[in-house]
Length: 258
Length: 301
Image (cartoon, rainbow over all chains, first blue to last red; front, top):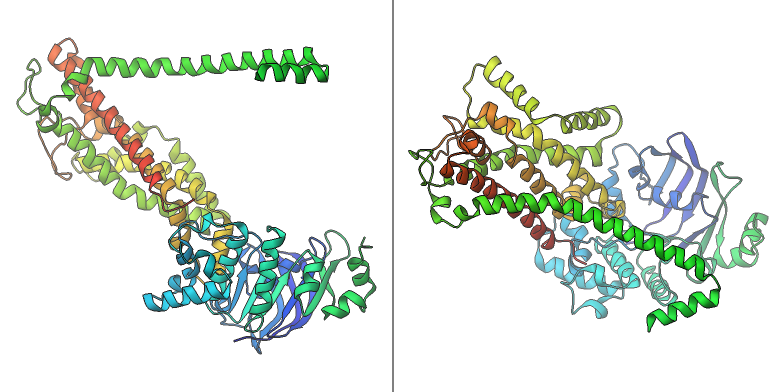
């Protein structure tokens, strides 16, 4: 299952501070969408509003609509916990649960949400690890702690954990920034495979990475420090990196920024 | 070999004098550090030596651990401390049973939920509770239990006073341990669609578990040595007793206190030191237990 995200006039706040101003975009299913932009421009903040993780931070709130296949994530009576089951997330630094083994980490989401059937859990464990290209590396040490894996393996473990709960959308917040180039390549390959089943949104500081993996790219910018971030342009990746519509985009991509 | 290399290195830098000055400072710092360490060690070794040499012998006697002081005169070399050991352990256990849930839940509230005025007020109250002298806690319970409600002095009242002393220790140590749990783990759990309460129960508390247990055991060790509440609320009793709600119960601190007036009598003298030695041993065992739990922690590296 893969769903379309339609963001309409979204304002994102931290308390009274407007972090992202009036952003609208459509994120297509079965594709990879990349967010690029300078630090502090609100791209991570914006990403976190797509599964209501933004609200975890005290004072975090939004105005506007985020439609997931026409259902407003911020509509009245929508449970943020249920939203996060549908829209999964992978973080900047790999964060396997330290109290759990590799295998338990993968099915943590299922188990914590009440799945007890051992057969189901075992099947899902293998399926998710295969899905994250990690099965062959860890199948002999599923009961060992996740902290013993390398950084890249830990990140793929976190991806396996995220896809084990069968989300429709997978958000990735700079998933490769703590990894070496080979692990980065492994994750990028994985994204290419996963996009046949999921809507993938990735925040990245690495423009080559955006060019390599993304079908569409969105450029966020901010006018000055302390001013809200905003969406400058969103286009097909090829167009963004060859012939963008906005001057600011071209400046940023060609390194003439600021 | 290595000295030669160092000399060469400093020589090639041409700053031999400066390097020599630094070495001297290093030596002075080292001497001061070791001296401080040894000075701090003196009272500790002294106490241990005094207690063990004067009372250690009795601990090797099986009767010390199995018999009470029932019907034993102060000049008689007989009986044991079973009644006091048992009383101390029972009271510590009941105290922990009440104080640990309150303390842990308060800490969870402060770290995971507490925002704004109420949390600040609670935190402030815990600070105040931390600073309360044990005799004040004892007198408070006395005023409430005996003066206001008109109830008898029973061992359970002692537990209540000890609870007041243990709660802040548990709250503060648990709080520190919960704060050490990286926020990323909470976020990872939320992102899997796990509700907050379940995240706390299944992710945060297990991650902090060994630290919390260590804090609880240290709090327990502190409470076991408390004497003021025992003197005021739970007078000494020479026989075995397990009833917290009726009569009296002997404990190690009150046993020591009781014998204080008869230190000139050799039999009593030895019993007092042996009781002190037993108390130190119990606290030591609790501390070791705390470390052991830390080793068996579920956090795997």
